[in-house]
Length: 190
Ligand SMILES: [Fe+2]
Image (tube, rainbow, N blue to C red; front, side, top):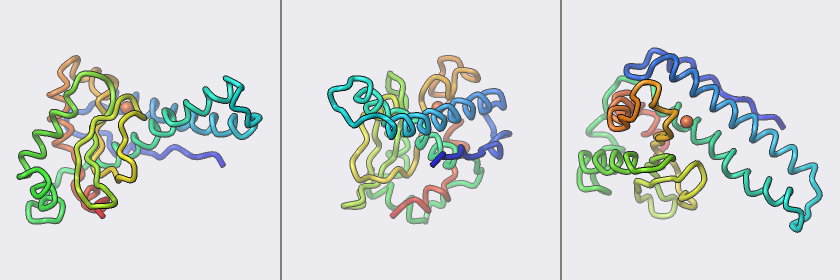
């Protein structure tokens, strides 16, 4: 089955992220969708032969393309809202429980996103204990926490900010925070 890319044009006009940057980012996302579909087709048509390097490399690559696709969807979907976090809501309470205070969580999440390298900062909720973690993901597929649900996803590949911010990743992260859709995060919580 061919998976269709979702439309995020509603995000154009957000403060701090230009139309050019967003349109380029949507095109990159479309590339991950296309490649996920392509890999899926290729893998289903290949002989299931582990000694064939072509089969093995396609299999290894699937996690990169699939996560590149899905993480962008989480990312775009947790943006685009101006309403502030409800400080008396479940999310604020859980963040304070896990990190000591909302501010301590924000500081840790921003520091995670500011780490050197290309990848993602993700606030995860453990499906087993309900606990929250800020996690660094290298590229798209290295470092995911098994069985945990992404609650907030922030892209920190250079393409997510260089067009507007050059090397100033911290300024991009500040803009990202101004546009977080806290209600979407509340809904993702288990
Ligand atoms: Fe991206």
